[in-house]
Structure formats: structure tokens, C-alpha cells
Image 1 (cartoon, rainbow, N blue to C red):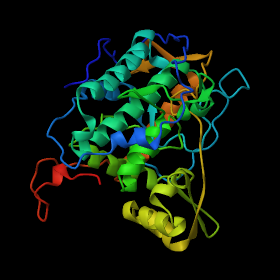
Image 2: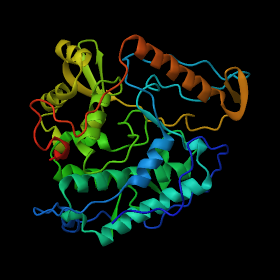
Image 3: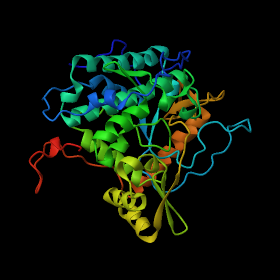
Length: 380
């Protein structure tokens, strides 16, 4: 059964940004679900061929997510203060030109409300469709989409906010607040990741599907996950993150990695240094492979908690008119956002200069040595 939404998403660049008063969902302080209760989410060994349609969420992602492009492994310099003031608005992170950004400041009250409505639709889908009996890829897509919808919903409600981890729901940090209900069981975003997906899917590639709302985390993809694309999108997220400064760096002769690997260590990296380095090697490009070869260790020291938006989680009082061919348009954006987008444009020009013009994805095309079911490869 398709998941439906009754409030339509509007085009990405909305003229006004209305703030919706934040109302904490009830029961966010619900006690942790027991292992016996969570056992209901174990994937069935006899899956059906049913599926779920995420076309509405797919449309939303295409409208509100902006890619900053692949990492050039060059930390962005500290930007100049906004014109006419010494106060620094916008993003200052050296990772600000990596990953993807959500256009929270352009979302109006109707769009924000539609996120909550869609999250509830997904929850209700689990009351109609036996999620556990779906194929493993269908289940994985469901859990990733539900997690990410919930994160976008709550951050949209609370915006402007500089760091999503500062967001409290009924007195509980966002990541641990149990405001999501599936089959009558109260779940937090962390519960979905660690007590369901990490527990039942053994490939650490699943880490890269979950969006945290932070610059330092995996990217929010510009399309919804589904059974057919989940392996491809996770692979894309892994390659993007592993080969970025927010994923791997060097400090002297030591390798530094994101602290997210330490969080996932109990599930995927029990021999931390050995397992993490083997995992990174799986996705590393030539530059990252050289980094691995010349360093030792794997110190989980990289973190960036600033919000993954375009404005740095703050409403700037100064604006700049958008021009097209030298003609001013009616649409205005904050100066700090204009500066960020200018930096992005410069970066893309450098990517083109280097000949790194993007990734070509082949779909439903038979290539030499392809497995017969390459488009249906399941994430174990």
C-alpha cells in the first residue's frame, strides 16, 4: 500500500519562511522497548513481494535537498563577517562544502506540517502492511526513510537551531526521544538505527543511510530509498563520506576517523582499528587509499555538530537580492547563504577543471560480468 500525504510539498525556493511553534510530541520520555518487544521487528525468513511507494518523499527530497558536491579534501577557510556587522552569520565549519544541505529556512508552515503528517502515514503503513514480511531491502528502505522523515520533521519544527543535538523533545534529546510509534512500540531515531537496523543488517554500509541533521554526518540523499535503489544509495553515501574530510583525515602519522564509527563499533567494528580500516578500504578512492597506506591507527576524533542547512541555523537580518544576467530578481536570500552558494559554485568550477564531472549510474543495462540480479542485490 502506498504511503500518502495530504499536504503537498511546494517547490524548493519558497518566498517566505514561516516558523511553526514547536510542540513536543507526547510520550517522548517513554521507557526503552524491551528486547522481547523489539523481537517483533526481526526480518521474516519467508519474505513477500509486497512493496511501499515513497514517491512523495522522493519529490520532497528533490525539492529541499542541495548537494555540495564531492569533497576536494580541502578545508573551507573561515568566511568573512556579514557586511556592516562584526557578527558571524552562516556556516563557519571547514566541512561546510561537503555533503548535502536541507533548505529549512524556505519551508513554510504547511510544508512543515506535512512532514509530521507523512511520518504518521509511514507509521500507519506498518499497521496495514506486515513490514517484517517484506524483502530485506524493502524493510531497510522503510526504516531509513522513517528515521530520516522523523529527523527532518523535528528539525523543521525547531528551526532556527544551530545544532540538532541541542533539540529537546519533552525534555529528551532528539536522538533518544521516543516520538515514533511502529506497531504500538515507541521508538527513537537511535532505536531504529541500533536496535533494529544495526541488529539485523550486518553490513556496516547501512550506517550511511541515516541522516543526523549535522554537517559531520552522512548526507541526506536527494531521493527516497526503496527496495531497488537502497544498495546503490548506501554505496553512494559510503563513497561520499569515506572520501571526505568529515570521514577521514590524517594528524601526523595517525589516521583520524569520524566519531560515528565509534558509535557503530559494537555492531560492526569489534576490533576497532582493524575493522574500521578494512571498511574504509572498501570504499576509498586513490587519495584516501594513499592516506590509509601512510598512516596507522584509527582515532575516532572527527566531529561537526552544526546543522546541515544553508543558513547555519540562524536567521540573518541582512539580505541580498538574487540577480540573473545582471537583473535583480524579487527573491532575496541572506548574505551568508549567498556567500555559501558562491563558494559552492567556485568549488563546482574546480571539480569541472579537474575533470570530476559526476557519477554515471547504469540501470537495467547488461554489462560484462554483471550478476543476473544486480539491480536487486540485497543488503545483508
